[in-house]
Amino acid sequence: MSQENVEIVKAAFEAWNAGDWDAIPELFDPDVVVRPADDWPEAGAIVGQEAVARWFGQLRETWDADRSEPISDFINVADHVVVRFLWRTTGRGPEANMEITIAYTLRKGRISGMEYFWDHTEALEAVGLSEQDAHADS
Image 1 (cartoon, rainbow, N blue to C red):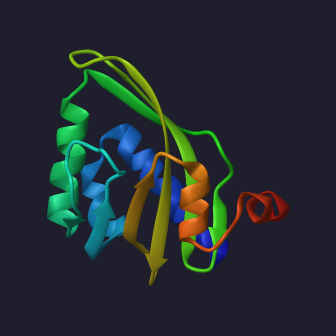
Image 2 (cartoon, helix red, strand yellow):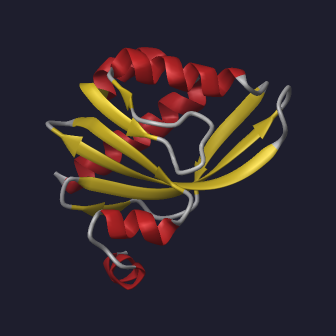
Image 3 (cartoon, rainbow, N blue to C red):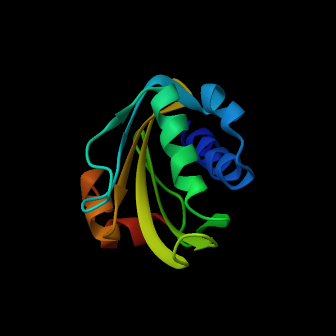
């Protein structure tokens, strides 16, 4: 199951980079909950596929181009996958290279939760790992 979870998360990255919102029903649970990082402009949880698709679309509209590139291993623990990535943006809004970690929760072959963290160690702790545990598993 763990490799299957990693493949689902990788497919979500591919869908994001392609702007493929049609993949959301296939990859995300209907009741998915997304929690942006602390100090993100939109506070609070985003709940449900339609709300998540709308939020993703709004994020993408801010810039002319963007791309998310994993910069860490996909760390699999129980029903979670944690990955650090670089989100590169250019265009209308300010250009940025943001490092963010997402702790994904997967159930029944779909993403049921995404929690964004600025601090990678905090993301690992949220799924019950330390930085040392994560390196031992990779």
